Length: 207
Image 1 (cartoon, rainbow, N blue to C red):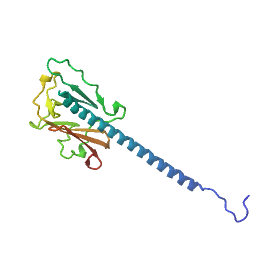
Image 2: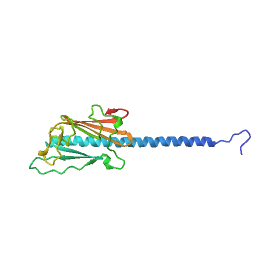
Image 3: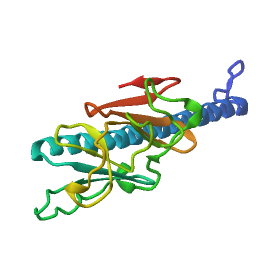
Image 4: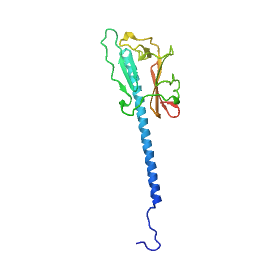
């Protein structure tokens, strides 16, 4: 029993509602931040996968002194194939690599046209943009030759079936549709085979 002059301690209904509302807001912010972090991790992982395949293909071409065909297959597959010389036993294509291991909700080859092209890029009208530096056209297929140059080729199974060997510059855009924060780009300089990576955060920034 309260003595005269004492106030009853505790929380009013309004105070409790304010606390609950604050907890809900904080929980919502935590969920959003976690989701955003997960998307960022997926995007970076997918970008790293593309870079690894391209650099592996270039190094393999140089070390084996053979052309290495690079095939991009929508929505999210990259595959390397070592081209053998006439008379050599054909080598089966390597196992394909999938962005985010082909997991549900993973990234794919995707371009956000509204974000514009990367600095010094070759265009962003398609997710996989490859341009022959001599003709300005799109090559039938691309490969790393034995000097490490990224060039155009005719997609035939034999080493003798290569094309004009013109350097090809390219940009591979990846992302998760509807989420521009996942936009990533990988560029290839045909003459050197150099690979660069870009992320989008208001503008394209090289990593």
